[in-house]
Image 1 (cartoon, rainbow, N blue to C red):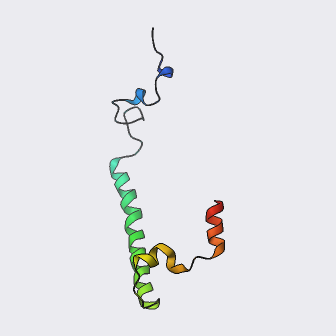
Image 2 (cartoon, helix red, strand yellow):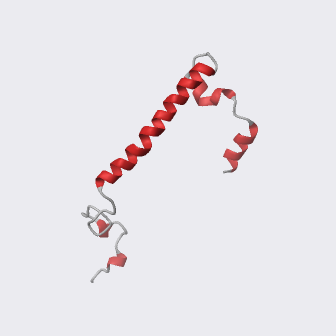
Image 3 (spheres, rainbow, N blue to C red):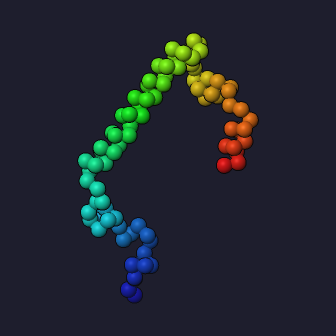
Length: 86
């Protein structure tokens, strides 16, 4: 009995291959690193600036894990309802 490739489990035909793009990746590895670093570094910088601004202009109280997990009890009913619906 000869098995056709259509009868195999979907991942068996890729067993042992480095890429599902017939051996050649669509982009170079350096481009992948550039994309990851290009997005993560500016976003982490913006986040750091926002945290510093919040410490300076925001409430002077210490932000604890309880405050973080509950958003300081500031989440309104509309946002909660939209999260449940989605």
